[in-house]
Every structure is written in C-alpha cells, then in structure tokens.
Image 1 (cartoon, rainbow, N blue to C red):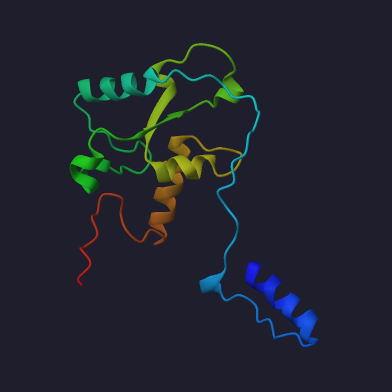
Image 2 (cartoon, one colour):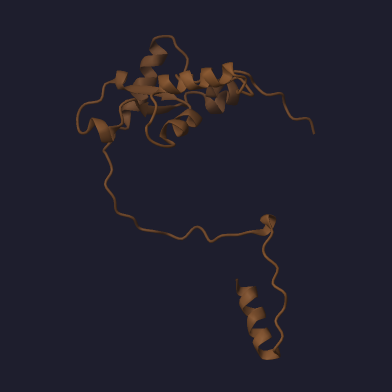
Amino acid sequence: MTEVARLIRRGLIAGDFPDFSPDTEDDYSAPEGRLLIRRHKSRERDKGLRKRKIDAVLRQGRHLDCETCGFDFEAIYGPRGAGYIECHHVVPLHEAGEGRTKLSDLALICANCHRMIHRRAPWPTPGELRDLIQHTASRGGARVPAQQVPEPIQS
C-alpha cells in the first residue's frame, strides 16, 4: 500500500499515472495480527474433565481414538500424538446451562470431527456425524479411510 501511495504521489507531480495491475493470487496480502480487546460471555469449563475422561477410557483398556471416525493420533503421529484427543460436550453447554457434567456427557473426538460438528447449527451428535461419514463412504465419497496411513511422499 505504501508503494501504491508513492506511485500516486509521483503521478500527481508528473501528471502521468502508471498502470496499476491487480494483485495476483500469489502476492495477495491482507493485514493481520492487530491486537484486539474483546469482551464477551463464555461458559465456565472444568479443565480437569478432559483428563478424567481420557483416564477413564484408558482404564477400560480402550484406545484414544475418535468416537466419530476412529482417528488415532498416536497411530498416525507416533509419540507426538500419544495421549492427545479433543473432548466434546455431547449436549452443548449453551443448551445444558449451568450444572454438573458427567464423563458420559463427553465424547473424545478428533479435531476434524470436532470442527465439522461445530461448523454450523444444528450441531450433529458424534453418533450422527459417524452415520454421515459411513453414509458418505458407502456412496464412494470417502477418499482415505480414517485408519489408513498415507504412503510417504517420495522426493
């Protein structure tokens, strides 16, 4: 933008404006990173619930795979993914309101399924999203099964 302003000033002085060609997709830019202060309401969450849910699943001898698609972070990412999975309130807190959350009110799901659930209302349950995934896969829509590890890229 500074460069464009400089060229405009030069054009005003010279009486001749250069041809401004639009940005190409490769060099398009947008301002980001400005600090903002926001004020909003949010529902309080107990940070210990996620750990308790994970511990309960592991004590039952189960793996930390997504309850929706079966993705296992440790199987794909090795030690970096060990013990990692997101925790989702099956009944959203904005619907449930203030109260007590039981471990059975939580589902362990991968980040992709979590984003797909919260993408837009009405929010499907993890089970409803699982049904959608299975239905899409049965129609040939799934490209890579959740548990299938892609082949390494050859350089």
